[in-house]
Image (cartoon, rainbow, N blue to C red):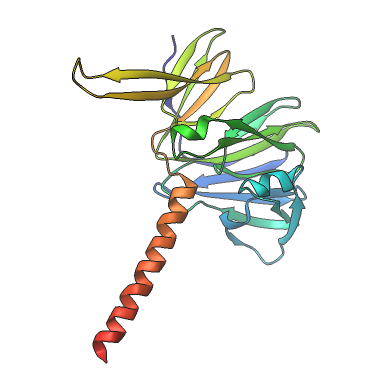
Amino acid sequence: MNVPKPVPAQTDNETWAGVTYHISGELVPQLQVELTGTTVFFEHHVLLWKLPEVKIELRKMKGGIKRKIAGGEYFVTKAVGQGRVAFSRDAPGQMLAHHLKHGEGIDVREHQFVAATDDLEFTFEMVKGIRNMLLGGSGLFIDKFRATEGDAIVWIHGNGNVMEVELDHGEQIDVEPGGWLYKDPSVSLEAVSAGLTAGLFGGGEKLTWNRFTGPGRVGIQTMFIDPAEAKVDDQSAVQGAGAASLLRGLMQQ
């Protein structure tokens, strides 16, 4: 059976579907895209820099209201025009591109999508219960990209290093719930749990993982950063800074 292998981290002057792009940076990578008439859409907070001639517009998501209620994005932004634009996420890791031929697709873990050419279908699926393994939530969103109007590109960010394994038909791999990054639509996903005990008088624990069954590819990230947890940490940091400032003010009086 195949085992996960590292995905190359750097790309320069790569062209697909009429778009040339560059991926550089060893810690927090940058994706740079050359726009020559092709529109690229992205999550608004990943924009790093752009040339002035590149215009930014909104793109409404299909089924966006349902996703917004669940804490996702209602709109994505898109870059239009001639010029260069760059993206990055505020986390160490790897940026990688998926080249999709007409009719192909890729399923991506929520909040890992960076950008994509505007000629593909972007939907999502909520898988109930999987997020319970992580933070006790109600489910996990999977972003689904399909090249319905020709060849397309999807760029995603993986935390830490990214590994990929190609599963043959019926082959399986168990991945820590926060570890998987993307999969081919042909790969099925299920939750598997096992109880662990420490003997007659010992306590018990439950170990849970995601089981993927081929055929197709599965991407694995070596580090998981939960967006909800990071947001809580940011809020705690702001509150902590505010409390420290107030304390300093009282001491100076």
